[in-house]
Length: 283
Image 1 (cartoon, rainbow, N blue to C red):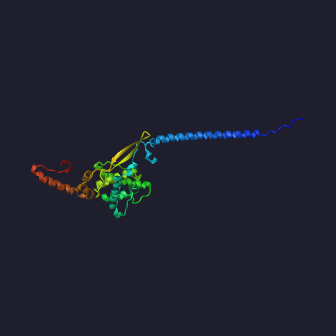
Image 2 (cartoon, rainbow, N blue to C red):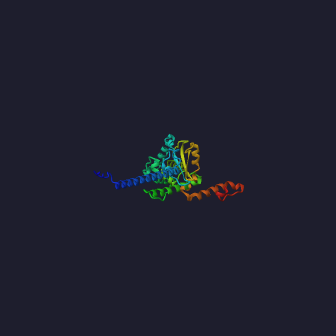
């Protein structure tokens, strides 16, 4: 009796096709995994280059490390933000600003949030100096705000330049709500214009100075003194005397004052056969 041939249980063509499909799928997954690993490795390397000190300075935010080559940024140490003396200094400055701008119905509650756009600083400088600045009254765009800040800071720096004042502020630092820069600027204005306030003495803060050099971030913790003693600050104020006030409010009368001084000096020098004709070069 002849054996009945058995029918193959599987379908070789289909199996080969499935195996081929699985092989391709497996190869694709492997390639994608390798590509992801390479991408992750590149990203890790990029982060290591751009922010190598984030692990050593956990106080830094990611945006604090976004610097151009040789650029520097000063950030307030979180511990100093809670310092009672520093908080007291901020309150004194806020109360002073609100007092100066009371007629403009401007109320400042927070130095970082209320001064960064230049509006309050413009009004404050105009009130203190007696000079109107040529800027738009209200600006909502970032470009407009920075243009206003540029005008205001140029005016402030122009006033302080003869005293060789160390400017610890810039358009970018003020607009980025850098509290250290804002406080330094307000202190300079308060001291220069002899604000009728009592500043807390010997207030110092800790800051983190971040600098990018040769593609690597460098950080340093530095202590900065914001105020000294009342006597030392009064000496700084006395550098702005009656002649400064005269130059600000009545420059046309300066020559009259000079001639009066020359007459007074010559009245006493005539006995010595001396005469003064020019104060700047002879006295």
